[in-house]
Amino acid sequence: MDVERDCLLCKHMGGAHPVLNAIPQYVTDNVDKVSLSAMAAQISDTIAEHTEFESSPEEVERHLREHMSEKKLVMHHILQDLRVLMRTAMRNSVVESEEALVIDHKACALYLDTVKQVAALYRGA
Image 1 (tube, helix red, strand yellow):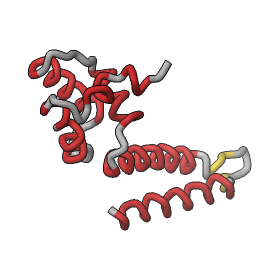
Image 2 (spheres, one colour):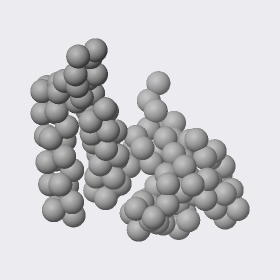
Image 3 (tube, helix red, strand yellow):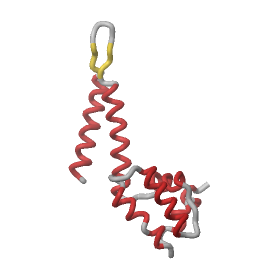
Image 4 (cartoon, helix red, strand yellow):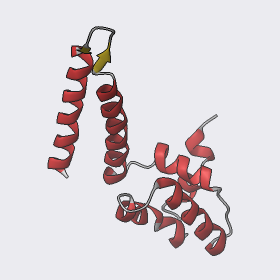
């Protein structure tokens, strides 16, 4: 099954529907201000109200996460993934044993490398 072919937004983007065509710009302008789930709900409501189509918030969010290639949105996804990785590496950097706290050097190195990647993303923004 071709997921993008079955996606309403992928099928009709760039067509004769100005509401659908405005979605990428709306997402780009607001990705750092509104959560993806809230944006997906707003977009779903707007599609239902102003077009002959319907797309659930879950379908819209899947389109935003998996199909859109807008630079700002992709960078947002990468940053969110790096932040999860950074928090996980930080939690695993210090291990408690009965005798003392021990630093896990691999987890600590991963944390520091991830911090560098996040800083580089912000410098490039």
